[in-house]
Length: 141
Image (tube, rainbow, N blue to C red; front, side, top):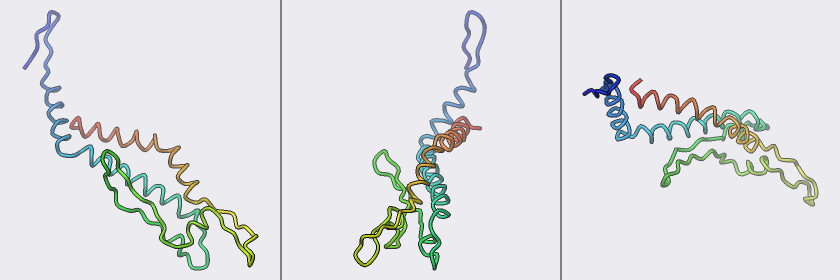
């Protein structure tokens, strides 16, 4: 189907194909997959930052115990948990009292806090890369 204008003719068939491809992609859940993959990538990037900042200790258990959970959808939000099941992880993160009378203090290592602040600063770069890929997919590229 073409459109004849006063100054010439324009063929909209490529635009129509792209629009149809975008509509089909949206119906097939490409946006949801995009969000899932993006959130998961960011979570694994965060985990890769957290682990080396985590003290090795005598057994390495604390460092080995960092995990990335499943991406879940809660309404319009996508959520993923990065966690450590060792009972002392929170004390290493934020610090804790020590000594017989608990008057001493061991400073926190803030391995997760520092890593998540880094991720926040880098988030736009990750997002731009993923959106570019998404747009290529939506346009049939």
